[in-house]
Amino acid sequence: MELLAFISMFEGYTGEEIRAIFIMQGFSGLSMFSVFLLMALGLAIIFGQMKVINMAHGEFLTIGAYTTVFISDWAVESAPGFLPYYFPFAMLAAFGVAFLMGYLVEIGFIRFLYKRPLDTLLATWGLSMILQQIFRLTFGAREDSAVMPDWLMGSWAASDMVDIPINGMFLLGTSIFMTVLVWLLMARSRWGLRVRATVQNREMAAATGINTKRTDRMTFALGCGIAGIAGAAFTTIGSVSPSAGSLYIVDTFIVVVFGGAGSLIGTILAAFSIAQAQSILEFFLDGVLAKVFILLTVVGILMLRPQGLVVSKIRKP
Image (cartoon, rainbow, N blue to C red; front, side, top):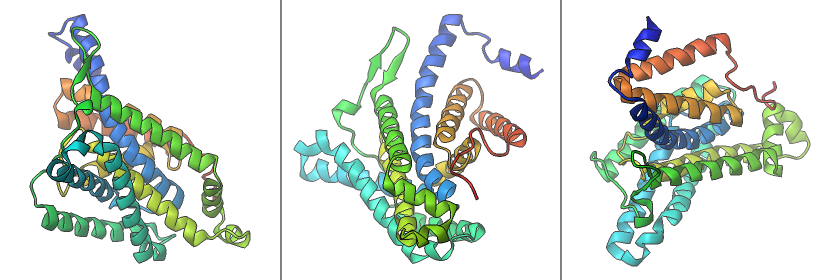
């Protein structure tokens, strides 16, 4: 019955139309995949490595998005000649602001809650509510958008029936760059070695001279900074509102858990499979029905494989 219902989705379409729809929705899904991946990279570091359930992670995306909108408005009003070049600088600023905010949050209360995951969930959920209200009081409840430079507008016509948006390709390139950068940091740098040592045995790491408190602080701040970059990237495909980040937090946690907490490869696979499935199914089905189908599939796979798609080699007790 399910197979018949699945096949019935394609009734009324020619083979050429279905191929074009899959290609178009596939590239649309790549934009969603890029946002999921950028969000999940930060969360994989914070949740996967530090075991902190950061429910305010979406608000760090919102911080990055509002930083980009602020710089865009400044460029439009005060420096029009800077408008074609502002976006890369806005992404760096989004990272810096979210990184600094994460650093302060870690000092403020996260450092008191390590090894207490449920307490981190409650504390960061409260922080999420506070930040959303601050956004509402500061920027208003209405949605706002950044002005995109001309080189991010338009699309590339791959064929007569397929147009690929340029902002989607930019998003994909950004997510690939950030993924490689995070891998280099985690697997090929002394900082990554300190993080892994601290996660595996905090007391032994401290005994070897590693400043575990500073490592925790920088790790949490880095995860938040990457969420800020995700917020800057998000402005290329959508408008920002005080609750924009909260719309992605559940999907991001699903990506991290489904991929395998702490696994970079698993995070990439989970983000890609969920984004592609959601993008294609939403074209043929109701959006809510598509989401339910995906969640049921993820739950079914996790029942068979609780550790997620890929098990991290560094995730040892």
